[in-house]
Length: 69
Image 1: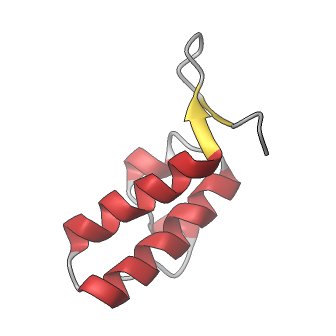
Image 2 (image 1 turned 30 degrees about the vertical axis):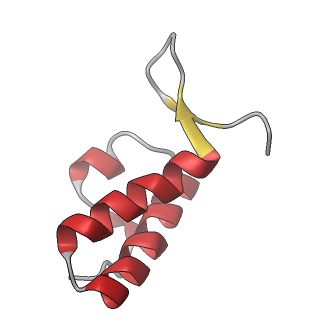
């Protein structure tokens, strides 16, 4: 079940990560789903891709771009 646009992403993604991170999630999910055919594995891969560029702020709990980018 690949995602064609951000609005189709799970609420956990749409409601918590910035738009650029949503794009990263969508592309990583679609690629992993095409490669593995396993939705659970694709979600795990997508979250890993987001965490390469974004992190949760310890104070606010909001996702933010990592400083090293």
